[in-house]
Image (cartoon, rainbow, N blue to C red):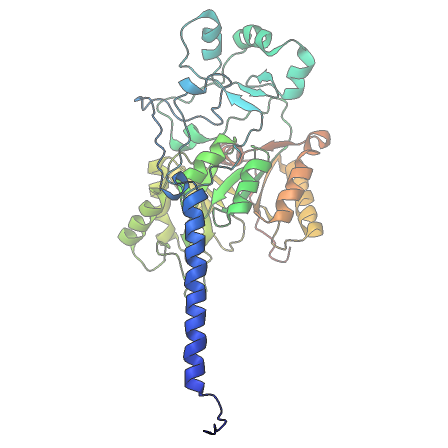
Length: 420
């Protein structure tokens, strides 16, 4: 009888055997999953798609804020488009804050003529609010249905005066606003949008439309986000990357404006940022502590903004800034935030900064604050904005603050307290 000698198993052979078994198991699992998808999956979901919107060939018609008209979607010339399936989520609910803007494209009838005479009117919660009126005034005047309101108040109201000559981009895309009662106004800019999808959607859909939204220069699908924001009633800014003192410690934006880059280089970088989108009212600085101190570097930038008809907003974090002087010399609408409300993103600190804005508005007639789309910021702004009317304040878009500070000369710009 042949005797067998017990030996330890070969490590190499064991490794090959186990690797082969693992490979076979992986291939089998993937094959089974692929077969299941092939049998029960949706073939359309696996193919790229492209949606195309048709616009009227009329350059004089500017896309208005919140153009969605009930029962007239098929005839509306302003349609939001999705560039591709990867750009936006088709399942996202479209924002609806109850605000509808008039249109002059309807057939010529007595009713549509009345509508055409009040293109600057807005419909809020089912009532037509004319320039110079507030929602509370309209609600107190009549409890008639909307149709009756259109036929009476529309004809009686006088449209707001239009600026002489062609409108600038700032005037064309700024949100309409009237403050006939002369109440103190508070404006808020929420910036850094477009980087985080969830926070951007929350800011667009949940914040009051009077709050201005500012998008980061690195935003993908920038025009799509701007379309969504404007459809919800917000006016929009784009952030300009500017050279900070610690430039180089982190990866800078490729189009950052630098003190030593030269006029032509900065002009080329500025144009690249501004050409990424349309239908925005102005720009706001992103960083820029060093760039803000150089009049030679900032001068050509404000000259270009004046030629393009754009406003400039300073976020209030800069010291020794020359931006206000540059804006005044070039005639650029300008606004500077007096408070960065969530420099410390804590509930108590944000509430304290909002009270600071209220005090500033009481003293000087208007105030401007800056914030980031933190969840706590959005939640507090939503709750705070509902109490403003009872306190005697009006929430206004940032464009209104820029007009006030540029024309009245009564709003004094204060530097941001870095210590909060």
